[in-house]
Length: 384
Image 1 (cartoon, helix red, strand yellow):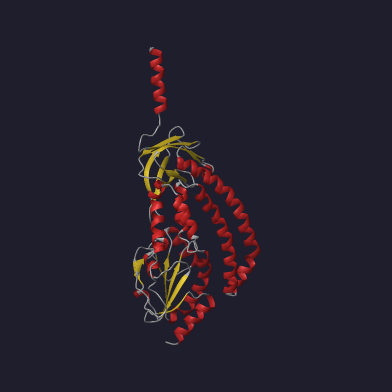
Image 2 (cartoon, one colour; image 1 turned 135 degrees about the horizontal axis):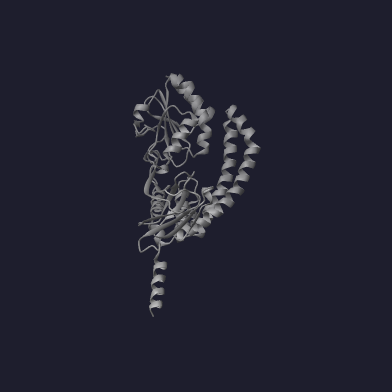
């Protein structure tokens, strides 16, 4: 009898070890080949795109454990000291197992909870898909690189736009992979993140997005991405009338520049002013930037000013693009994607988008590119 009681006691201890209680998560991690005492940091990305440490633990005998409580599932990152890259996973209550591959972070394995099991399968499928997609994109680039270079040198916007549209067709075909995944996984957090991202694309198949969202579980709709989707759908259903039309005074605005200083349209006005909506992730915007830089360099001394509003969410990528593209004029951003209040005021639902103002701040033209933009700026300055 005593032996039986001892066995039952041992069994209870074994089965209760590292088992999360109600409203609790336990992350059990394994990191082979990393010295004891190295840290593992649990990180969260805030609304500005900055990473914030949530918890820090030390590795012992190649293992680490992080405990806590999550209000709802959300994407988090694990940073292991001395390793390059971070391990993305979904933090949610329950027992989460993470096997970190020190030689290839991308090969790290997740399991233990519903969303991490789905996320793990998603990552495997993505790798296979990306290999095929990359082959198609490389084939297109190799076939058209010379054409694009020649068109950029000749400022042939017709050819540039044609090639960009063909490239976008390949990209949109790739997006279908993610959409199909969301359609097949109506309870998974990753599906809500996919649909939320879909709605940032002005050319989104709205009917399809609505159908996927309608299929989501009631619980998924209550999470942050679900609420974001509902908010975007509500705004689409009740579009804001654009206050910025040709012939009207451009609405004033202000927003932080990369250094955090607030800059307004009013203080940026010149004899002629370009308001430019763009983003670091927008390929057509980046392709047009060399033309805008050339126009600015030619006409700034004669009175042309530019203020650009980025629809980025990641501050670092925004700043990197400014430096890489050599954009020397005023740059501002609220880092809110298409939910930027300036974009909403101007009725911007696609980028690149430009507004050309005269000396009084009146909008005289919209969405000109390349040679057309240069001709318009030249004629406006010549008339002054």
